[in-house]
Amino acid sequence: MTAATMSHDTAELTRQDRCDRCGAQAFARATLPGAGGVLLFCGHHFRNHESALAEAGAQVHDERHRLQQEVRTPER
Ligand SMILES: [Zn+2]
Image 1 (cartoon, rainbow, N blue to C red):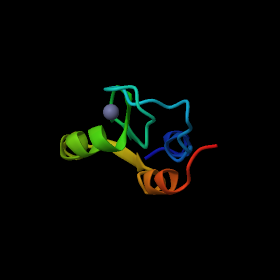
Image 2 (image 1 turned 90 degrees about the vertical axis):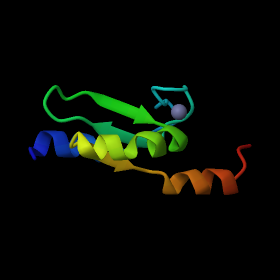
Image 3 (image 1 turned 180 degrees about the vertical axis):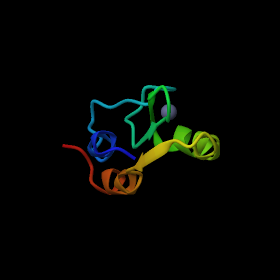
Image 4 (image 1 turned 30 degrees about the vertical axis):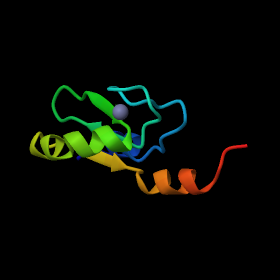
């Protein structure tokens, strides 16, 4: 709701952002209300936790559309 958190929430995820659960590259970020904790998820784990995060009122930044681009574009 505040401008400060909004600008943070729209920052793009990078290759350095890793899933908190498994360490894979993160494609979604959930910012929890109140304490302000930030959780990073890969596509797989975000899917697992998506409904719980929505119930908790987390603000979600979802870049899973990039997952498909990365798969289609081989590295190197
Ligand atoms: Zn994961």
